[in-house]
Image (spheres, helix red, strand yellow):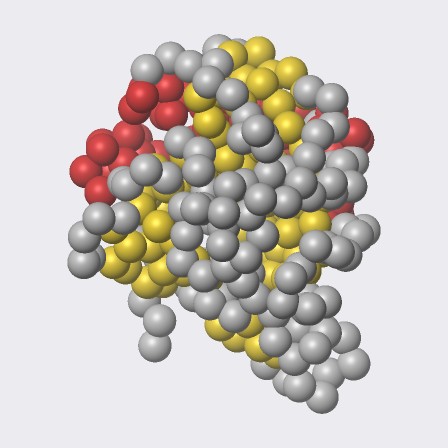
Length: 247
């Protein structure tokens, strides 16, 4: 059986990140972290129901839908920037690197929700505590991985880094699936952990310089079901200095 996530209290986040390069908050820890009740997040999941297909999948799959948005977070100020391509170098993404990927933008209604800005501000604070106060270049990715073709791959590129400073993976929903195990490994060592996030609004925060990560494929619990199962996540990356852009 896959172990449960090694969830900690929000007050332990910075210490845990310094010690091991990653940390997990369960829903209660997430509420403490945001300093808001979890009900403040209830308006967000509906914005995962109209994600367009990811047309850039180089493995020929049809299992991923997504939207993308970019922001500057500086102190308590959150500013959306004009819509831009998502780009990664090949050294970080051997499957989709070196390609400007223009995904449809996140709904402006979702971005305007007070909890959206609160989430970005809250994530930026421990990142600045760990690496100094920064002007954070933030990218937000809405993902739905489904089992339309029998299997869905959250990370088709395999275990990887993202080429940023920090990565946050928030579980929004799981429906009628098995699998989707999270794996985190030392970037320069042998140690690793594995667990499966099952509770909505659990969050995994990663120091992208110190660890690599992946999620295993998902499959339907009932292959005969009329509707596909799915796993919804919100992945937020933070990078100091600049966004990752093609030269």
